[in-house]
Length: 135
Image (cartoon, rainbow, N blue to C red):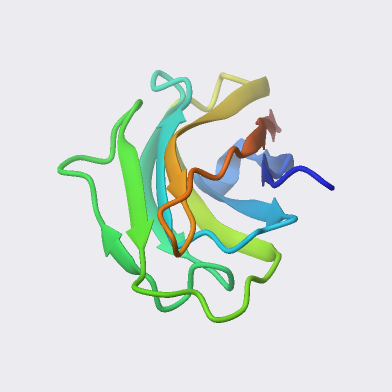
């Protein structure tokens, strides 16, 4: 049996871009129907301004946080998952606030809750990612 895993992709971007999109993928998806995840990052360098569903969560309902801020929770849910798929679950879009903050910045996820169709807990392993800002 392989462990269901959510991975924040490592991304490198030039600070002059002013914005960056970071994909979050899931592998070995057993059929997640409800996902509540906390996003954390260095808010002196980055500002989260959007989270959008990708292939895996496409068609799910989304409960947007009151404010996109460091430590906010993102929630997706659906009535029923027909066939679980692996791939890109969602994308995080950040504005780059500090053009002097070159180097690596960790983007971390904490899974608050994840359930399948039968409300069974899905223990998701998380692989956090690095955003590397360059000139």
